[in-house]
Length: 202
Ligand code: 5GP
Image (cartoon, rainbow, N blue to C red; front, side):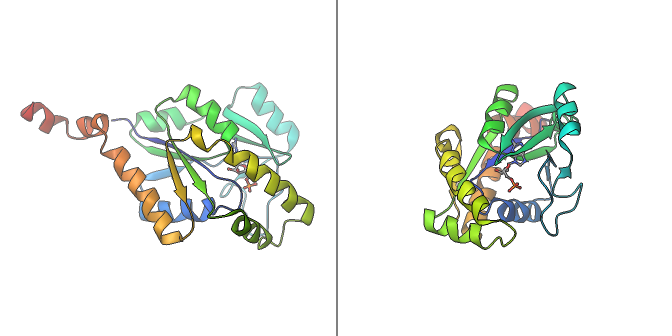
């Protein structure tokens, strides 16, 4: 039984982290991969929980060792997904979710063409800016850079299988749950999950 690989991408401020947290609370069967980053932790972020916070030389060493299935520079910092355990988890039937950027999604798709891409959009540019400004830890310069990066990120929406507009959190959560549910109802998944039934019926 193969697990599913979900790639969730959104511009910063679209509400991706909250949505993913709610998804995991509603569906404990999905495991989120914890990325490595050279970014400084924000207030309240813990090493090994939100990210594995690492320095530049350690990150570079991991790239050189081929430890990442994908990595990218985003907003001036490096982010990468550890190779360890992802393919094994999927082969063991575990659903795995990657919260990465569009560049990483592109790399993952070449390795796992069956990955299910989900793109989260904000309801408007104005709302995106409001949400970014609420993050008091980010400087004015960071906000301007992230707004520009958001436009760049959203140019890649067509590369994804599903699009969720996060204008109302409960509705967006329902949409994500529907994507997960639909992926589990695909023929290949159902045939593997119900192999005895299939062999008796067909
Ligand atoms: P933040 O610093 O706000 O947590 O994340 C900034 C951006 O980096 C987000 O778009 C996030 O999805 C992306 N990101 C986080 N982890 C990874 C990763 O492992 N790989 C890639 N390519 N992007 C990541």
